[in-house]
Image 1: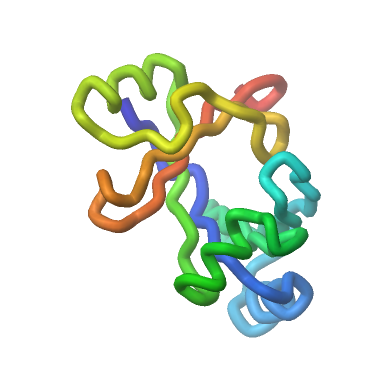
Image 2: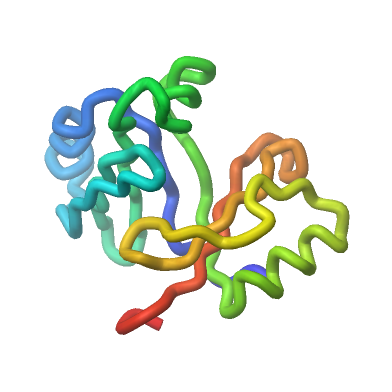
Length: 137
């Protein structure tokens, strides 16, 4: 059910400093910036060739990313995989016994449909499913 890797997300406390590191010393290029209030984050998308990395900065202490940083520190937050039909993918994963954080999709970065699979089901790695909608589909 999973498609290609869409992006790697990294939780950061200072988006400006993280962007400077990735776009400076590491040679990434700036691709996009967006505030996603529904997820409680500022998102800086940087690219290295076809590799897409989302730098996630929490908007406030209620953000799930803030809680992640408090518990685990900065670093890998999740891997995101594209799926052609997110509802079918969620149904399939649930039938296979995986624990879902989201039983139904929600709106994420770029207005795309997203849902998360709990890391307890995936060897400690938070996984995001993404169904691309609109002009990028």
